[in-house]
Image (cartoon, rainbow, N blue to C red; front, top):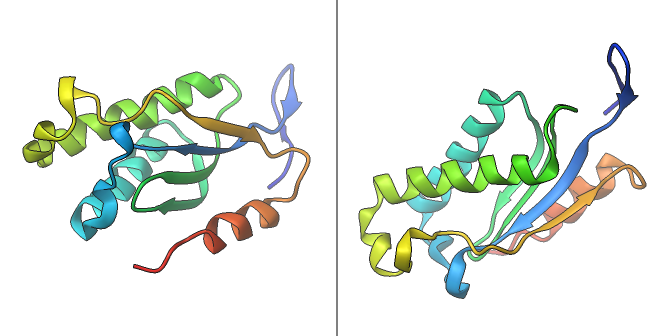
Length: 134
């Protein structure tokens, strides 16, 4: 991962994001749902020109290490990931609406950290080593 140069700027916009489903549910214990979530998150990244370095869908939360374009804020990137993935998950698995009231799949909380002060390998290692046994 390198410093990107633009017309009037230079920098790196890489983040480690973590978020979880609402109501402390663990819907990703189901492999089909876990695979769908990963696929949708990668589609969002491709559509918006995000570069995904690491992505792990745990039974009860998501870890993603991603570089976003310098024109997109942290909150907008998370909104894109969470919003589109919730829409697609509910569309393909309508039975989940019984467990997630009012159409909210993700909790409003989130964790984000700029990774400028550590190496990308450190973050990749942390995410891949936090992967639980299925």
